[in-house]
Image (cartoon, rainbow, N blue to C red; front, side):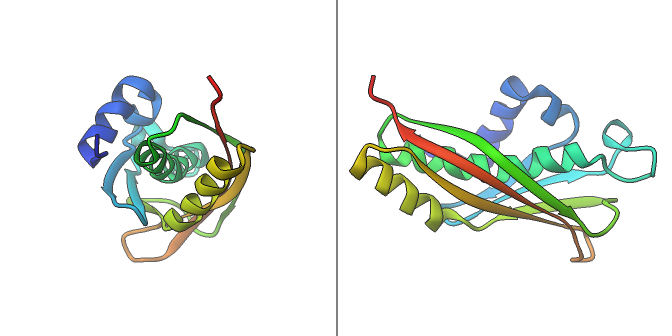
Length: 152
């Protein structure tokens, strides 16, 4: 089954309702990248009239995780995935529509191939950059993902 933005948004509604209610939406996915947006609204604001950092984190993580899910599905193997670490930098107030893009499809391919070949767990760092409507970077998130082929 090919993942599409519509399928991912339905998944978010049922499996990640807080992200869905805060406005996290997948706009684009292909084997190389995933694009997720979220708009600054009342429900996802902080006291400083901008988007709460955790909402940005949900959108950023989903851009990396959706790409990971699509690659695992394409492999045809049963593979577990887990975020084991993360960090973020915030450079501007997040107001308006923020677009998070992850371009790390090739890194996932590398880690999954190695996990399948060796049977050992692998880790990789993936980056998602959030930009505002003017094209300015508001935040950059890095997520360390662990992947391992399931034995049963």
